[in-house]
Amino acid sequence: MGKLRVGVIGVGGIATSAHIPGYKRLGGEVELAAVADVNLERARQVAAEHGISGVYHDYRAMLAAERLDAVSVCTPNALHAPASLAALEAGCHVLCEKPPAMSPEEVSAVAETARRTGRIYTVALNFRFDPEVVLAKRFIDGGGLGEIYAARVRVRRRRGVPSWGGFTNKRLQGGGPMIDMGVHFLDVALYLMGYAAPRQILGTTYTKVANRTEVMAWGAYDRDGYEVEDLAFGMITLDSGATVLIEASFADNCPKEENYVLLSGTKAGLELPPLRIFREECGALTDTTIHWLPRQDMYAEEVRHFVACCRGDERPVVTPDQAVILQQMVSGIYQSAAAGKAISL
Image (tube, rainbow, N blue to C red):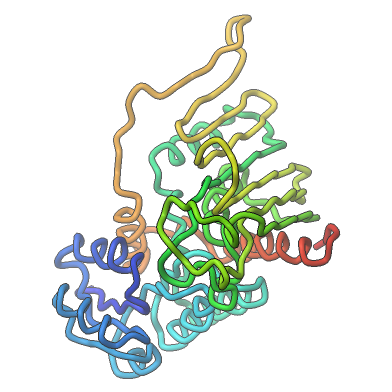
């Protein structure tokens, strides 16, 4: 197999900081053939910076004109499913940024199209490639935690509303910190627990700080145009009988910013980051920490893995079925919050 011809749909920050550098690191394995973005001038700039010949305003025109093997979808959330569907139908493998879509129905349609076309569809949940998560998964798969029956996930910023892009635009993003940040560590917890489907979801959302405060850590934004939640909570019961509690915030009067997963098992508990294991040993309660672990660039490894999957050398670590389950949970939290009651699936 020759060079994999790759296109990038959307040339915002995640494309230029993660996807494009990741492909370029692979040298002779990949040809970055084209980019597409509604901001054509920005697309031209990015193409010139990285030696990419094809530049398009419309990703559909790119897919029709270029003989691409794979694409990265790096658009705002509202276009994740439409762009993924179009790329799959054009015969391309797809690495789609998180979240998978704006609704479970959308990502289910993408998953079905991937199955029908025989193309790879995977989601850019880069924390799967964090060495601590990889090590935690090995420990759990070896039976170290026993039965995992509860998870607590916390992804919060004190005053960290993104002041760039469309992160406060509900039409483009579908929500705020839960769909933007919570999705990452909810995925980590589910991955470590075995990815059981949700049975019941209770969610609440609040917009109490971001639309009124003047003191923000990440720069100015349009407070009057702030359309998404700044704090969200979810309680999810799984088909396995386990429970997941999740909290996510852009702006909360909390003591510190943190990304946090705590798993409770019958043999031991596990927390990350940093990775610590809590268990009973030799008649004592012990805490195990990691003295040294090789580091790796999670984004670069994510792209390398995707290319290896396109070549048939590896199998996707993030599967379409997992993408559907993840979207069910994130969308379910918003649905429950809007209804003011728990929902059953």
